[in-house]
Image (cartoon, rainbow, N blue to C red; front, side):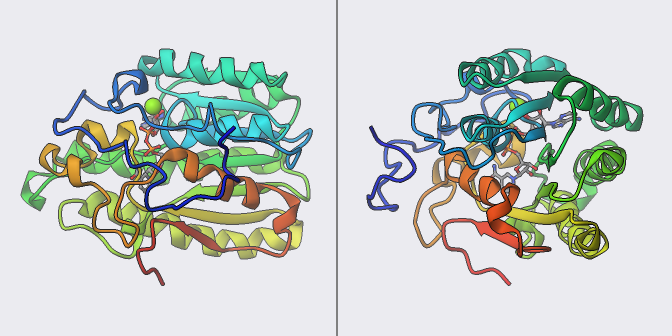
Length: 298
Ligand code: NAD
Ligand code: MG
């Protein structure tokens, strides 16, 4: 069987997955209606006990990168809670079924992370459902491309910051009292944090904020035995990109300007999160793991 350990050429590993030319749905988008179907690793991720007995909360764990991380964590032996928007119920059910197929506990928690009260409720439900918490992945995100600053609505600016930055703050704050030494926090940033596209000024600046927040918090929490790290993806084929994250005309060539010459798949992100969640990265703190097809990064 092909899995993440199969030795092959990364240039041609996903040759068949050229994204389609049109924006496919309104955000946040349901994964099963994105074509070609993103690879979350359901048929390819092989676990080896690296997170046995761990308890993880993954925001935006219904689809894309968060969905791939949820599958991988379950296959590595973790129980997993996922958060998502109510409209994404079908995607969430798919991921829950995959987690349960591994014999692990799955907790599905719908709601809007722009709401601080929901963020606190989300952590409480995850802790109650899992019987504790020792991995937090802040992955939920909003990205809408707009050519000119004058056309970014006040609402979009607000929502992008609330989803990408405020939710990370509220969820992390609520989770901290539950995190014992050895626990890990992984925040999802982006190549956009240091190489902002001109049509993503609101989004890209939230990702710079996530990087900075993580570097500061990682130093604050290291003495307590809690490690904070970041994964910074490059262009990845997920619902976020196909629902306004890029102008529709740019979708077919998404990722072609990376040194690898292609868009990445969510399944290719999951091992980075597994590494940073696991004790095998015990001396790795405040690090940003770039998974971006080779785009130079600081
Ligand atoms: P995705 O659409 O599959 O995942 C984003 C998830 O965020 C959604 O599934 C949704 O559940 C959640 N979300 C959004 N708004 C929410 C809200 N108000 N309340 C609750 N949940 C909400 O897309 P993805 O690309 O896998 O995105 C995951 C993360 O990866 C995001 O932080 C994104 O910024 C980051 N990222 C993606 C790319 C890329 O090219 N796809 C590149 C760099 C970084
Ligand atoms: Mg989704």
